[in-house]
Length: 627
Image 1 (cartoon, rainbow, N blue to C red):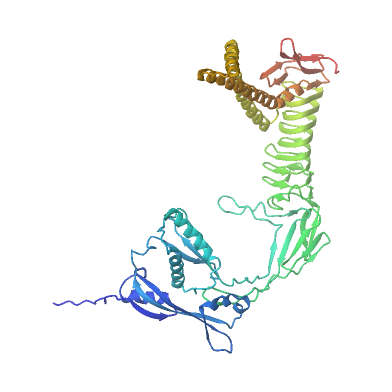
Image 2 (tube, rainbow, N blue to C red):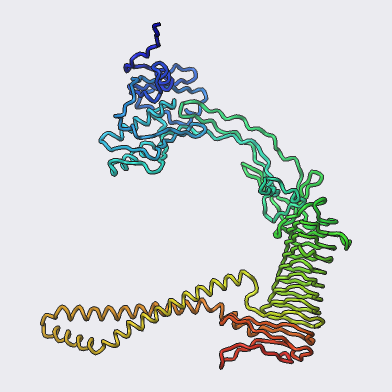
């Protein structure tokens, strides 16, 4: 049986006139059963035509193409621009100088600007006419993308010249990183802006790692600060038309108007209007209130409780001038519920703070008690019964029950156990199992218990300890560096001292040779130069040594100041000690902890640290009167 198959005609270059070169290349590839990339073309002629309303189509001569850069002309929606091309379709050739040069054409969204991108790994060699051929190569790439050529080229000529200069220098250039530059620019449209109402003060809702909204932080109170932009109305604006690099007119749509504000404002919110928007700014700090279609800013809020069911967490911010009064005072209920987080300027709680609750403020007052897992951080803190953690500047506690306190100054009426870390601690009545760590003073007025621990240390918190550790490490390095320099200076100076007489003799001989006009032996000159260089080196080493000694003094100054300050620190007890209690003083240099157990019924009113200069040691000294 005879089989027949379709035959593909043999390809011969041919000439065609068209307005769409890309379409011709696709048709040719389909005809010959090949890929579009298998074909190339030679550009033989370009004709450019414009059509104005009420006029016959006009061809623009090549030397008049720059007239098409006129913005007024391009903005005319009834202006038509087109090009026709006479081309010769040919096969692509591996012999082309651009065969290993990978350049593509890109554009912005409106196609009013064009860019050439040269892929990393492209290789191209220099030859005399490469600049002209590269321009032609780029034009052909633009034509494959249906872009017009010979005008609207922006600064492409300069970019091409700069790139060719790189090729010339390298002779064979391999592109290491992607290179992009502009090769076309027509009339870029200005986009239409639809109106919009933006609320800024609400922020973004927090999400956990599983992208679930934290419903406990639902924004019951939205804190704002003076001068903050609360919301903004973006005015609608009709854009300006443009024209893309294909010659097509780009019309901008009319703006949509859907968000015109229709609310009222209190006198605590100011309005700033510009051509583009209307901004609404806070005149005072506080929190936003929206009632009866009116926005207002208030500073004081009263609620019965703060819980997941009622308000959720409240994060108005400490800088917003928001005060919250929580009125729940039932001792069997929590005024601040489990897991609630509150951040405000001031908070007053009539009742209890629940487990895992967190309060951050400038001022916090709790008339009830704090749960052992609660945390309060504020500049000024007052708590009736404290079992949790508190951190502040000034903290006042009526009764401490195993709670933890970190502050600058702490005043406690009755301490029944717990831990206090502060610069200054004053306790009216102390019972048992209280740990106090201070840097300046511990003062007890009534002593009722035992098994208490009192420590004076220059360094209170972990951050300071880490800083001091780093400083100690730097001090050690500096001391080692100084010892090494001292050894080198001593060694070099010893060489100078041991050879002083011979060097003086050598110096006299050289003077003699110089005065007599006799040529000096080369070995004498070399020897004397070595001596002078050694002298200069010793001077330089001494200078470096002194600089490092000065640096050591600077590094150790802070530690010395802390060491000196601890000699002023006191542990004062206006009563007598009961049972077993411990007193400790920590010294930085040398690192040492001094320990003392005052005897029961001791008459020693206060203890201090004393430095014995003769023995260069510290000891705890107790006295029965305060001097």
